[in-house]
Image (cartoon, rainbow, N blue to C red; front, side):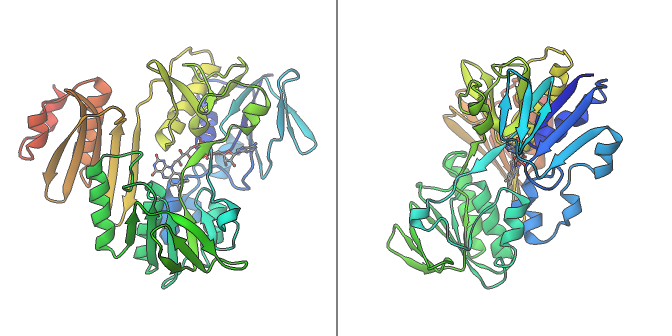
Length: 401
Ligand SMILES: Cc1cc2nc3c(=O)[nH]c(=O)nc-3n(C[C@H](O)[C@H](O)[C@H](O)COP(=O)(O)OP(=O)(O)OC[C@H]3O[C@@H](n4cnc5c(N)ncnc54)[C@H](O)[C@@H]3O)c2cc1C
């Protein structure tokens, strides 16, 4: 009987194994995960769960009975130490598990602040795991002074939740503007204004010089010369793909674990999906850090393990919740040269074009713009910019009959 082993019990793993049985896989399935809990959704960790508005059991992607009913063995709280490709074994503290097909869904690890500037002080947190957020809960309370380092989506979402909960929030972003790596200046401006409206002290072009405190963080010195008193620090300075096992095993690495169009690594018995994997795209490779990608790649790998021979076609989408604003993003904006703005009351969207080609849409409280934009991008259609910019023009006809 064939045995599929999946390392990493996160979003991609859950999608992969859930797909195997409906496809007719009758062999053994084992998922090994370092975290002590079954696969769960990470997005609420910096949104509703952090705010205290989502119960723990709603985070889980599937009920525990789902796994037993489908003959999926979850080995939780166990970290795989290394992979022996010749013997087709994975090793976890003294135990060896044999596989016929192996999938790596090891996700990402958050970048931390160096210890030399106080990264190891108590009261300094990252937001990647449920354990991270639960550890922060005691300090994350009304009136506390929080410094958020990094103005990407996770930092901004944490700032929004903190402000909503009555913490006093300072956010520093070393780059000239928040969201610089991922969005146009128009989107940065939109969220800068939104946070200002909610009393966040948002400083761009300003980094953290050092944290101060004996064992627990008490203060922060910023590169603009300011000294702040702080009770806790949330670090949102990016993530990197978790390639530790793959590197040890000698698999090809290229901005993550390099897979082919079907999701196979440089070893034909080993597959990879989700945050940890980079796949061929155009002339180069792409790696995405999103739920949609983890689901789609996980399912694709399941299909290809069963011999489907399908190539991965990424359909990037993402969202972020801050205060009462839902941002929805479709497409990838790399290479854009023009932004077309569409504004209709509280509904605002920024459309990224390269010449006449539509690449991506950032839609704020405008699910119609998002939905239409996503479908147009996936169909390779580029609407007339004048229509997009005219808020009285109906978008739906752009999709055609
Ligand atoms: C706070 C937060 C907010 C987010 N918000 C959004 C959002 O709004 N929209 C969106 O699209 N995406 C969002 N994301 C990103 C999204 O959650 C990830 O892209 C997705 O979880 C990736 O799934 P994955 O399966 O690749 O990795 P993960 O879900 O990270 O799972 C990987 C698992 O592998 C385990 N692992 C690693 N190495 C080993 C080993 N050697 N042995 C055993 N286990 C191992 C890890 O412990 C981890 O549990 C957010 C992420 C975070 C952290």
